[in-house]
Length: 391
Image (cartoon, rainbow, N blue to C red):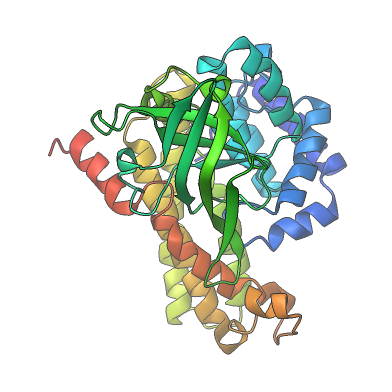
């Protein structure tokens, strides 16, 4: 079921489609199609962001007073959906969608004037310092500490699974500034330049051969107190605000439908009674249900309502369906799937089979993590149990 659009929204959709026709190059689309990880490659994403920035469209969810579009939730939904359909890369969200709203609300005027234009243009490329060894789902147990020393904090500790830290020039971090308080209290939110002495980035190479995540070490890193966002020891409230920003209905079903189109082409020569063909029919039904849920939730958002636990339901559905599609795709390719993984690309070796199958193995392995990152499946189930079932 499609979202019911007004005449103005239909005209806006046509404007978005025209931009995509005129500005989305074949090179950007081809690079996006080969993306196997959560984020597009930095160069591809930044190239697309700069195209949109020239149009004034990079701040999709930003208010106008900070240089954003000021679009309604339906306009953002339309824009995201059309970009997915056209094969555009997703803009890296760490600065644009995660840090920026924190600075809108908690940042000083000086921080807003300095950081926001550079986030919007792509001049600053950010990563997120939240998870630590032993502090992922239980983030409040983090141990990276920041101790006051005059006008600076001295930061020591480590962050892990830090996406694109190898490309980033800045990191926003949760650090413990009061070790004697209970876990949720005593945490502060710092902005840190990645070239500060004492910072080391060590790569984590995944089973798919991708270098997307890293471990970041802080050894007596000196950070100005003026780089703190929000009050000292209230960083937990700042971090939670990230979860409240841009509560949209999501457009994941559109991407999954495109993935299904590619999968069906692989299965086209199989008889209808083949087990893999039957599985795709079942997946189609679940994607249709997800699409309906997205439409319903977007309608709620457009009417100023909170989607509540709907985001947890969708998160589990999206990760599960993505895993089903990538698994079925790899089974359909069979022996041709294995050589086409990033380990061989890095070694400069050629595989066998068709170009359309070359990302199958890497996509499959990376998708296994989708039910863990961004809030694990078990955490989402606990949220649903508490808020929906009252358990």
